Length: 342
Image (spheres, rainbow, N blue to C red):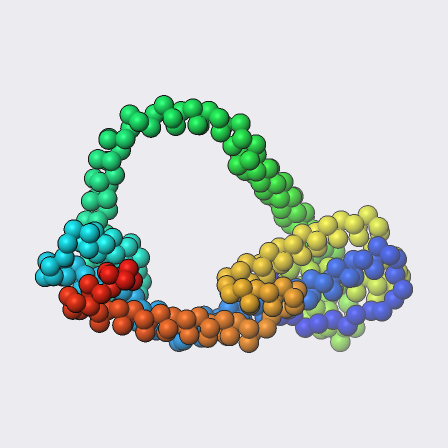
């Protein structure tokens, strides 16, 4: 969770190995929170950059594809094409209609026209397929039955086994996550009540300390509302160490309990970071760079992948515009068909 609270000074003491492990986990979560915040900011920056750089190129490309679809549909009635050429043109129009269907790059009038052609070609394809199936169904039954019988055992040992294994793994992870979330909830309340009872400004006689404790308690209340167990536990450790001057402020049992809860929070942060990375990093080059940096953000790599995509789209746009010019003339369309570059 994103939470901005004033950092508390770390009390440096010699502590037990269990306590050291807990402190390392706290430091790890602190870094994860910073990294998550950086990726969240990058998400907004990349979205804005993409909208300004990539979307106009895509919109222009989809507009050209729409114009190609219109031009070819008109050509079916205006040009003198043989049956083979007509079949190729029909296939191209159907492909463009599938590509453009419900596209957000087109206006509603264009989308409606695309949907009409999509429905037309979908129905024509279904009719042709049903006609073919009726002709071949008698020939296929005997051969397919025997072939399927031979494949049953092999399929079970491959696809179904892999699927069952993946489902079992997913269930274990879900059970683990549910247990961790329950543990976090229990730990959150326990730590909050412990800190509140230790600070308790109303019991402080010194006015300056009372003001200081009141401010700390306000920060504790904010952290509790945000369900920030990380901040609360870190503060509890520091308060108890400062108050008792002891390396054993928390028992090993408590340390283990809070460590489990923090590990669950750490896993949640890792998942959130990975989801952001997956949503922002799509080029192989950028993925390799992120992997090498162990998830550290390099915003320049993300900008480079968008610039590379823009370059590719613009090159394709140039080629599609040239193709559209050829489609506008019967001789040009015949040339595309002859060289199979429709």
